[in-house]
Image 1 (cartoon, rainbow over the protein chains, first blue to last red):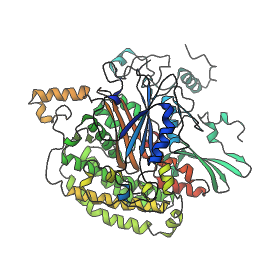
Image 2 (image 1 turned 30 degrees about the vertical axis):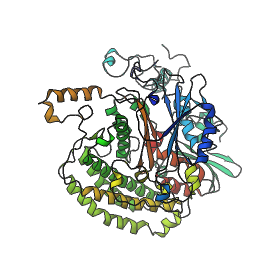
Image 3 (image 1 turned 120 degrees about the vertical axis):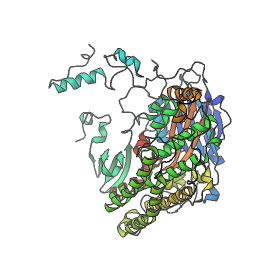
Image 4 (image 1 turned 90 degrees about the horizontal axis):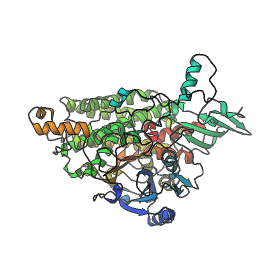
Length: 208
Length: 412
């Protein structure tokens, strides 16, 4: 269920990167997932020594749905003065990842800095990186369900509680039916049972 | 002891709470609530005696979904949440965000000079304040408790100035898209002059206390050495990169907000150890004050502090009662913000911790489509995996301190 707070994208740019105005912030390349490693190897040989960041964007409704963005910087990998560093070149690679095959090759063997960045994209977008040695959640709790930075993930978390929001909440910016807290109904029941000094009810007793 | 880790604490990653003994090695959990981890960082270390064999970090304890929140706010509102990422340098985050949005709007060259100068001044003051926290808490890590009081006294003066300018000590939301929220008030420049006068004396005392202190030197020299090659491969930026000999400073390489107009040096050391990072930051504080002094010289002449564009700048309060257009613009900006042309932009600034980058995407709506932050702390902290093995567990504390992570930014 898309969040009612997520702005509607009807009539808006589905692929903002294709209609951007001239901004001289970096060179931009769009490549296919299959070419990623070869292209990065080539760029590294060309002098793009630092992987600054990997970020994800979810363009819900576009095909391919996700963009993974690699930011590279051409710094000398040795002791270098201000003049030697100069104005290093920046490049960013945009890699479209379809929802049907949400996977990219890992590059953490090429740049160790990619390790946490890839884990974060796995955690928050649900894209996997083949060859990553420890692809586990990094920001969210390990038992979390869903990938919060996806556009169809509601802002306040999935509506999992039995208690809907009261009607007056409609006037606020909180969608009706959203859970009042991040707790699931089962967790709330357990908490209530604990407070009363009872043994927690077995699973399934929380849905009433 | 560790046969059934699943029941301990009911924790998401219960293995990490367990102290495991295996042959000669022991697995210890340091943090997440530990005074020397500078926030909520958990380091799971395998030690053999006192020597660290492996350090695994668990982050995310402070994850607050700021990037998600920003997507659901107006362009004008998102500035308030991004400021809360790096809470020791809130104005740096605000600066980077507004610069990125101004680039998307195509108004970067129309920001009044006075606004740019005040932005630079506040960012440099924030840098000093941020380094004060690093120096104070870093001193405590090493048992030098008195430094904390000296540095926090200095920081308090800077926070007073930030409060004067924006109304809040920590997250003033003073930098706005298009300029500033109001000019600096009467009395600000007097206080600033007082700080400029006080700073050299205070810094002299701090240096006398610390710089040649034999205990401190013993603890920091040759600890946590990062070679330039490793620094590049691990994405190290900021003072930590410059302590490894690479003079990359975003303010010099990609000047923004008028940094090219000011004279300042970029301190560089080649040793790459904790002591080099310590010295680089100390010298950076002096350079930051040098920039502040240069900006101060221009602040006596008044001038506009907001872009002359009624679609972006909120009209002044006085005009709302007199002009129908001003009233309408005010209503529109407050109730639905403005629309930003579609596109994506990467904007970087030199935050106290390194290259802070914002990758901002607009799809033409009145809310950002995506605000991705490149947090320097995240990448700097990750280097600990490289540094820790083979060192004493006591040195781990020095290394964390010398990388200066801020967990609001690591976890976002």
